[in-house]
Amino acid sequence: MVDAEADTNVVRIRDGDVLKLEDLPEKFNIIAITQGSQDIDRVMLDLNGPVENERTEKKAPYAVFGDSNGDYSGRDTEAGDYDITAVPYFVGLGGLEQGCEIMVNFTIVGCEISGPIVNAGPDKSLDCTSGDVMLMGSVSGGVGTVTQSWRGPSGFMSNMLMPTVSVPGIYTLRARDENGCRATSQVLVDPCLETCTPQILRFVLVDSRTDEDIMRIRNGAMIDFLEVGRDLNVRADLLCGDNTESVMFELTGAQTRTRTENKAPYALAGDSDGDYSDQEFLPGMYTLSATGYTGNNATGVAGATRTINFEFMNGTPAMAFEFGDPSATPEYEISAFPNPAIEQFQVEMKNFEEGTYQARLLDVTGRVVLSESLNVDNVNSKTFTIETSNISTGLYILTVQRGNFSFRDRIFVGR
Image 1 (cartoon, rainbow, N blue to C red):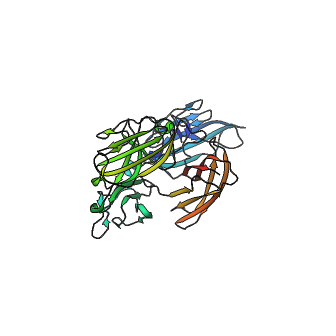
Image 2: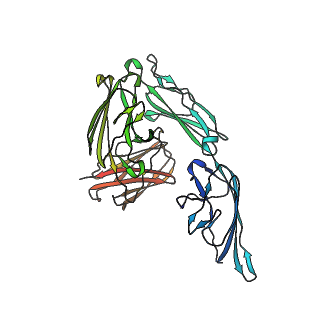
Image 3: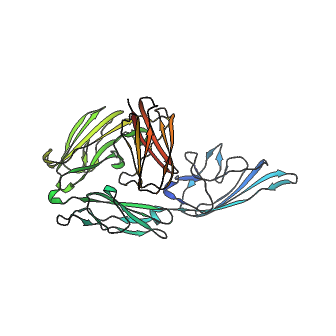
């Protein structure tokens, strides 16, 4: 399958594959790849399903909807059951002869339509007497057997739908059906409100044009304007929101800004009832701190200050950075420390599937300066040591990859 608008390959289709509509391009085409010693004269293609077409192509690429010198025509991608048949023909001694026919059946599922529906329930506070609270999650829909699990702070995991928890923070209920469709929902558990002081949970980068979340900003993040645009703001999410009356922000680095917000959502550049204003970031390094208060205008009891460092840049040479749903708790936990590194640093991997992961260290041009295999066994946590004593001082990108999993982080090597 190819993306007919970008003219790029998307996925190899095998017999029996189940593809998720949300992972596919808006307009698609399917090409047949040929092999053998005979010169192909033509390929007959026949696609059946919600989108159908029959076509004979005499020139590669052999595309079921055709192309113009590799500029693919396309149709709107629709969910449903498909089959596609491809028959090559070549010129033999007796004229035009048929080669080996192939037929592939596959399904495109629309997870938004047929996938599981998850509700983590309303936000809660820990009971001031018992020190715990029961979560009230629900899961419905999905195809076949649907598995579910909770993840939360301090490594909390549970397969129970309504577990009892005792640590405040964000808890994520996940579900996955037999088609691989996933859904998540989150609930915030506050400390006992009698002893609840404001606490910054996370910073979220927001598109101020659409007012939609882009990504959670983690410490050490490298953010590319080519990926996120320039219409930006940063929101602080809190524990003890009911006891919070104001949040004070302090931004330093390539730009400086100090602002106190007296109404949620608490945003660095402010907002009007959730219509976010712009913070016109310049490329460069930044430090952002935020502190919640129980009174207006940064008065009353102050909670703990949260500080992160991050960088904005115009383009990332030789590399692309992926951003996910900021509300989602990562299925895997991975961290690299210390940073800056001197002679070595550690890579800690938690809750990973068994297997071999490839770690690489790249310089700012994208050149690989170090490559190591990380073998993960069935323990819950494993730490690997990566030596940097023979690497020059400077900024590097650490990547850890296996299959569809990809992790990137910035590492400074000093002396």
